[in-house]
Image (tube, rainbow, N blue to C red; front, side, top):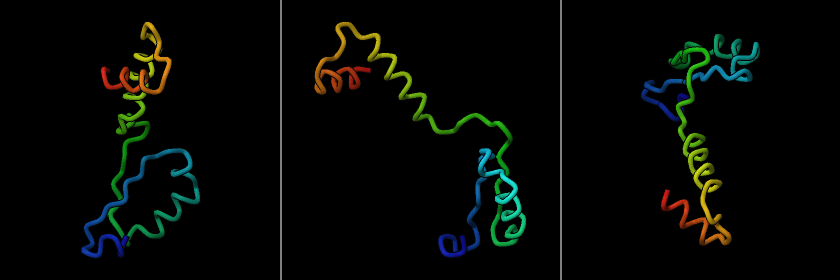
Length: 82
């Protein structure tokens, strides 16, 4: 953190995934808490990355397309249309 944010303004964002909230990770964060600011994320918060949502919408559109795309170019056209 001190290398990337030498101005001291960096923040560590904990997303509370199970492996990030393990005993070892929690202990490390407590031991190093004076080295950086820690942004506390609400437990079970909704995903902020919309990539999965977009992928699901496109997958649904491709599956419901008639006739279905048969070539990579057909697939590309469907994805562009959507």
